[in-house]
Amino acid sequence: MLIAAFVVAIGLGLLARRGHTMNLEQWSVGGRGFGTVFVFLLMAGEIYTTFTFLGGSGWAYGKGAPAFYILCYGTLAYCLSYFVLPVIWRYARARRLVSQADFFVAKYDSPALGALVALVNVAALVPYLVLQLRGLGIIVSEVSAGVIPSSSAVWMGSAALVGYVVVSGVRGSAWTAALKDILILGVAIAIGVYLPRHYFGGLGPMFAAIDAARPGFLTLPAAGMSASWFVSTVLLTAVGLYLWPHNFASVYTAKSEAIFRRNAIVLPLYQLVVLFVFFAGFAAVLVVPGLAGADADLSLLRLATHTFGSWTVGVIGAAGLLTALVPGSMLLISAATILAQNVYRAAVPAATERTVSLLARVLVPVVALAAVYFTLRGGQTIVVLLLLGYSLVTQLLPALIACLGPTPWATTAGAAAGICAGEATAVYLTLTSASVSTLVPSAPQVIKDLNVGVIALAVNAAVLVAVSMATRRSALHPTAGRGRMTIPDVTPVSQ
Amino acid sequence: MSPRPRIYRWLAALPAVGMLGGLTFANRVRPFVLGLPFLLFWIVAWVVASSAIMGVIFVLDRADHEEPASPNE
Image (tube, rainbow over all chains, first blue to last red; front, side, top):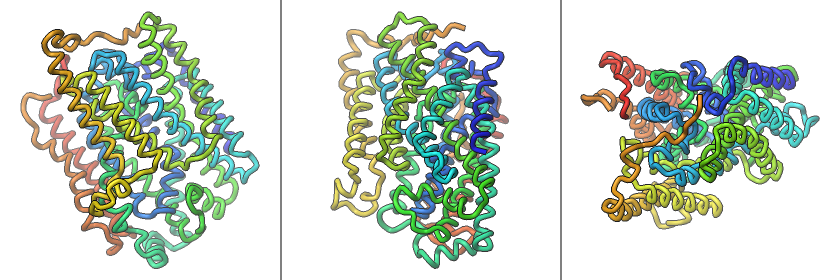
């Protein structure tokens, strides 16, 4: 079953190439010709990743109510997307941009800032890719009952990814996304409905039993992951969602802006699939108790092997496998495109379109190897990896907001300084695993529980404003508005 | 973006305000609604409501003219 899913996924991915010559624009943004369904699938596909499948059930299992944040931030991000994505899309289309960094290059008229954004992008993408590969390894080794060790699964998975990404680019992802979504929808709803009924006789009895066994598990605690943690985390991740370079770039694949507006209506409902994943995680609380720490990520699969025959477990595993492969492929495409387009081209401005396009594909296996290396080296749990990526990528927010208007409000130096300061703070806080309560122990509980990402973002915004004001005053006179009046075609992508 | 303000677009802030602002009130297990603990029901209800709200805005935007894609941002 697993192997069949693998083969079909790769086959579809390769077939998707047919009838398209693959220049960089085709390869990374599908020639900007995707309609509602494909853009929907791409966006949804990136949103329902291994994190949702294993992490969502794992959090419901290990933490209870705080897991509900996953349902909230997506919803708010989609509300926001209705207004913001069309603006980004219009700008990107007019200038034929292919990556998120391109957007900054064009807005700030600075390839150097683009290269900085690109490096941030790649730094955030690698842990996210590692997360997908680790999830893939977990799924294969659990489902095969340890016959296929996780490390060989990681190698096989990345080889498959590299293969179809190199050949088909983003079209491969969209086709595999279609297959994945059908499978995940069916599997999630089936197990989410079946498991509570099978073990408890329904949802109500299941939650009543959990509430009796673990009082307080189904509400947010008064301290720690409290309402204040919940709100700040939801807001941070909601704005972070579309800052992910691959999500940002999937905006470019759309044929028209109405597509985003329709998606903003459908995506909130679509993500209710997560609800069923939660049900499975909650069912596991009483049925397969005792998985602690990172092992909570295994809860869904443990419960599945505990309940079903090997064929059903195979189907569930296949669905899980695809939740790793599809986002994984988008992450790979993004990372490779960004490196070729925004780092290499910034360093070698004379590079031809052909070289950049070729380099992007050559870089795919390189990035994949780096991710495999970090995956096999082990260390962090799935949640920590995602939080690390989010804290890096959210730091692009102030610079993005400052340039959404017709002319950027911040100066290039301000944007760059803000990003650097924010990233440095974010990395420091993550590495020292500091929290607001360790930094300001005397603060009231409401402040203490704030997501620590807020601090890095505040530092970032403050530096951006300060440096922009300082540099603007000096820049206004001698070379006022140099390059800000006309926005050049930074990415002359040949047709 | 558009010549005249579209006040109804502020409806889009409602999910954020309702879902998160109501947390202190909604952070409870009982009553169970549709088998869900109240907090989870509250969130799910807002997810559904936000889809409806965006739908309303979409329809109003259409009625308000298909805005021509402005060439100069």
